[in-house]
Length: 80
Image 1 (cartoon, rainbow, N blue to C red):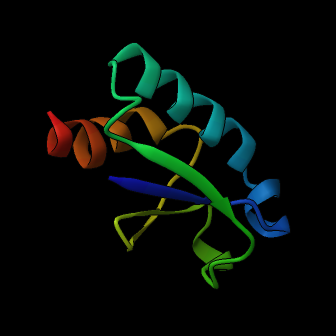
Image 2 (image 1 turned 180 degrees about the vertical axis):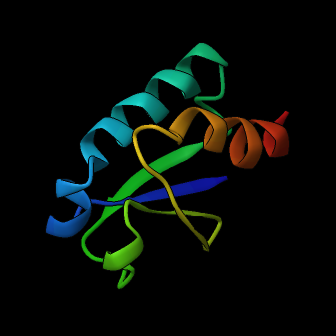
């Protein structure tokens, strides 16, 4: 599974760094390092709804407050 997080200026201001750090923690805590490939990308064209995150090219809007639920619903449930 490929997870890409926007690191453009708008998403950065909305907390992309915290989203990245938390997703990394959750991937490690759940032993998914070999199943989840994480990366960053500048501007995904969804600035109004950022932090933009794609999971296998499906676009989601995530915030530091929703990242745990996002991980559970969109990542953990699909790779376990």
